[in-house]
Image 1 (cartoon, rainbow, N blue to C red):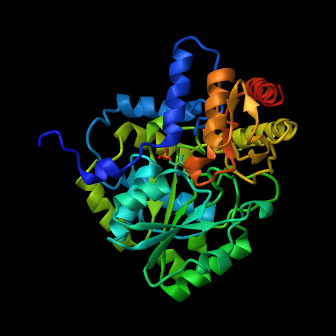
Image 2 (image 1 turned 135 degrees about the horizontal axis):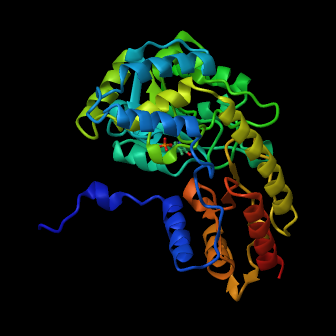
Length: 397
Ligand SMILES: *Cc1c(COP(=O)(O)O)cnc(C)c1O
């Protein structure tokens, strides 16, 4: 009796990206020369001026709980930041600061989804969306996108999956894992569709500062008063400011939704770390040139990795518009014997790559694809070159 775990715990899966990262780290700890393309985080240090703000907060004695939804200064700063970044006006009562954007997403689903509600999730998708929908009692409904069109989501694709039970659409543009960006005209069309059908939207915009070339970020919250009131916009410090370990995420939504999310936070984690909130305040209000510097660096590495991957037989990689991942198609490798093992799935390819060549990539299965693998280029050029060389040797012999 005492050993029984809950149905919820037994039904859940640990994140596959975290599992591969952990295995790669363990091999590294054994002294193995692993090239890791698995990380879902920037490889930059948090910029100095942001770290300084944290030192100051410690010295100033900011050692106690803050208000549950975030410090007044940070909530106000998040409003101003959203105004600049997505052109939507919010008041502090619309803002919830949480221990990571991931938790804002979790809270939104807990606050808005009931048993049996359908939630539309475009594929390929970030690993945690379907699991979090299930944890809220909802039903994940996958919306397939078309690789030949760069995995771009259209309003038509969304419309085809709407039923009487649909409650919410999850958007993630730029996307993890594909890097795809939803085109501005599609954002408008999807916004109209949501209004017509009376649906909620959860817009995960955590990569919106990492967009390359001519693509433009448009938030669905900016489409109309309806979408502003019925969308939870999620963003945070992790990706744009290289602050994954600090755990600061935030969301903007109607005061009603925000309060519902904040109430759940108050009964679970309470406020995000006080020192990290002080650092986040500096990140959002201080010098922004660090963000652009990192973006330019990522853009160059994206071009390098796409070129090297397309030079491998059986691997096809399109150029992603944003984030720091590539999502090459690897079906051309299936059926081959690599290092004595027949490879027929992305997972099998990733296993051989890690075990035989010490390259860590994440299998597409984690993101709802049987044809792709995900490589993060948030690593040095030297590692990108070495890793692609090893992969080429493994596949071509
Ligand atoms: C990294 C990531 C997040 C979570 O960011 P945290 O603020 O570190 O919790 C959310 N969504 C996507 C798609 C991500 O890749």
